[in-house]
Image 1 (cartoon, each protein chain N blue to C red):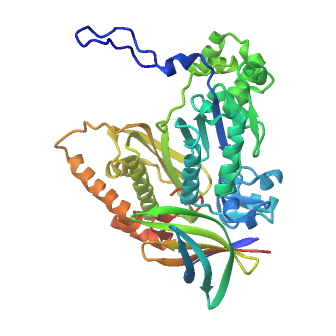
Image 2: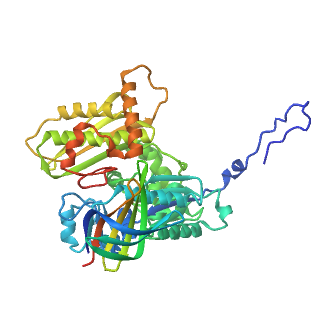
Length: 84
Length: 432
């Protein structure tokens, strides 16, 4: 297993429920990934904004770390953990 | 029980002293729970990314970087990797290990989750580090109606469900008993030492299990023919004090099952330090200077955030031959001012004898730390600088650390990735 640092902006379909975020799908480099499981999440205060980090598993064996920043309501793909 | 008051307002108040609940209970043995996360940094990464579980994970830097292992998962430890081992050596030893730089902000956030869980069980908590805490359960056991071991199991489950990290727990009547007990059954274990059985538990253990006994003290005790705690317990206190000073008395007390230390909700750190290496050894003095300035900014912010001041500043410069130069000096007065600390750093750096070698690593530490004295001097030049720094702190609090930076640190962008929370320094990236 290895990982790659990406830090690229991505598009994410998100479901907001009772103050919680649920990323459902994301599009990276033209490909759509359906999130099958949110493994874990944590958040950090960065000035007035907050960054939410999600570890998600999509319809591939790989695992992705997505980051949502409330400063600009932007999603980023921080890194990819690659199987094999 | 409340104090008895006289019924009539005309009569003087009864002078019977009040008897408070907690005074009655002081004779009851304490119940201290020590909780220690197992291979914390590596476990946090494994908890966050399940694909990393049951794989050797090494936190400290990527495999092609220079630097040392900060934390190795238990799978990596089984294959011989230990904290402090060079990353490249670890790669040779465990080629299939996953090497991670680590993210201090992530670990801090997880530690906060730990703390929130602990507060569900007692208000008396001492967080001694991000992954290590003492809980005084003496006053809350009845409320929960469970044994300490049962509470420890519930805490373990809550922590694992929240962040996927396993913790080991030790229960005892004193801090050091609980601490030793938590290390007995790792990972994810619980060890309880019932009140009255402390000496029985301690006797067979080697002396280095006691807090404060490091490799030097251990060697010294071995020279005396003292190997186990039972042997240490019978050495006269005076002999230990002669050999180890005040620590000798502590060793004797610990060996005889005594520990008067209370759970402190907040303890002053002895030292705050930040250090980093370079991607490649550098000969650029300006870069060394800028990195030290940046580290000073981080330390100044930490001091002010925590309401602390420091008196002694020390810098460390490690060269490509791994020889180090360390210089330290005290400031005229304790301070939390980045500017005052950096002026001392500059002086120390100027006085550091130049070697014709490249610089491998630099570090900065402040010590003799105290709480901020609110009666600071008035009408001094420092108060103007403190105002500037306080304003910078406010801006950073609102917009992130890198929203306002000294111009001298802009060049660092060429060498490090800048995030809102600061530069991502080279291994260990845990210096943020």
